[in-house]
Image (cartoon, rainbow, N blue to C red; front, side, top):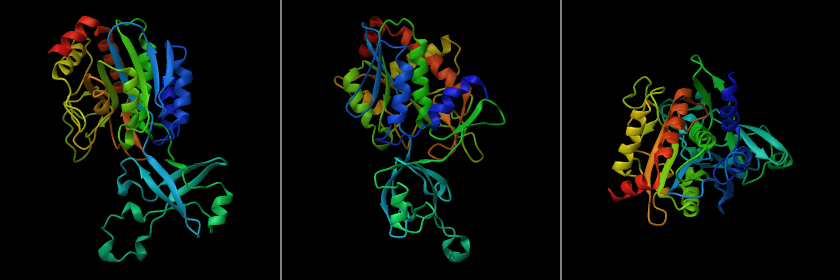
Length: 352
């Protein structure tokens, strides 16, 4: 495996569901100490790395949390009931392997499902509701489950692996939503040496359950420019419309999403930078979701807001795929944008 993939492997495989992002935060905090002026956290646990003392305030954020589950109950027969954290599609959850994180270590679980032999013919095509699912941890009683450390409130994450696929730039792992954005923000902070502004490299919590960390961290950053780095849809698959939604064709500069209508002059500014730097880009949109920019651009008096997304296949599942070039070009684009955001430029954009 290429050495440059080590960061992506490490960060994507860390566990961190909404409200329990500590392992990701600790990893990022250690990496950021040497490349930023100071690092602070808000009271929800979002991490804010600050570089620069003067000029307009530029906030660039990727969220640390991944979709997962929360243990809610253990039945008398030792089966585990759960609450989903984030948007799961029921059909990708069945017969999958999960990690329950306990003080005694990882407990392996699978999503139990009836074999087709005992499902009536007229019911076999029906999707099984999530509230009818359970986790099987291979015990026969509640007492046995408690003995191995399983308790209500523990996080459950997909059991997954990091893999380099047929084309070595196609990378598969869990939690690309949004560890790939977190990795990009980390690399942006590393790349920025001198800037005409104050940069707030932010790693938010609880995005998947309502952009909560974006709200609290943006009140610390008080941004004039707010850029969310997240995943976008790659629909270049059989039956999909791949227009502006392809792997390897560059970052997606969103036209809109469910939480943000971007400032059109700022969006055009970013596109002009991409053209000047010869960085490939796509102009996509998200109908059924939103990014942290939805809350970031509303803090205090408001900010120039934009979502820049890295195309991803099969998001919100155990196995998603990204293209390494899209990740690199996202970093390159945002670094180039930040370097151009001096006081005069930001004021002009705010007054358009």
